[in-house]
Image (cartoon, rainbow over all chains, first blue to last red; front, side):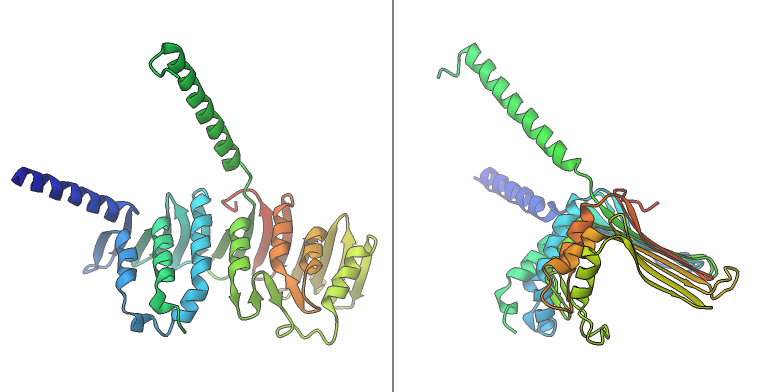
Length: 145
Length: 203
């Protein structure tokens, strides 16, 4: 009996992990080159963003709800189009102080900023952007003005 | 059908392989369709070597332009009436006249400080502005705009009035066009280059 319960929990655990990990991970890294600088490296399952979007209280999105709804179809279509593209640099700004890149890298969108004092990298899976947009778009409590 | 017979298994295997190969070649053909990219590059060597590069796939630009319904942009149509002082000029009629006119120079203004020429040549609308004759002068500015007439055509063909431009249709027309330079601006401080090709790196 205990064996069956254990097996059930294991299967449920694997299924839950599979669901949580299906969109990949959001990578955030911040490296400051100063002496007491921050070195932050975060790897978070991207599905958590979509799950979180279910539970953001409507009052926090109330002010922006209409703008958000106008933007959601665009965001969804953008994510779909982005997924079809090869790895590419969309925006690059370079000057003596800093270098900023917005690119598609693998299945994700990479935003990178490099300056004398810091190097910041954020990589978000495109699927997660799409999923989060879909969740926000499907929330009936945000549809009213 | 007896699935246990060797002949049936071979036939089934062959059919599955054929379908897989066919599907594979179809996907490959789709993946190889050339993506058109609009590139913008701004170089400002004076200002500590500042450089800005923007590379936009036209398919993505079309999706964005067509889906946005905000301010003066409505699903690919832009109302320029509020932004441009057209002084009663019907832009649609004007572009339509340019489109249907034979090749030639339409506007030529030349004075001591400026040389402006607007012409139509080999399927392109060309605008050339040259400020200040002396190229060594810091204030010297040269602007060259080269727009395929098919794009001008699309811009006005389904517009909804004199101050409405169908940017979505123009982008679709641009996507079918070959590699081309669209805008070149050079002055004493910076250069701006806008062009279209099928490369995604903008180099």
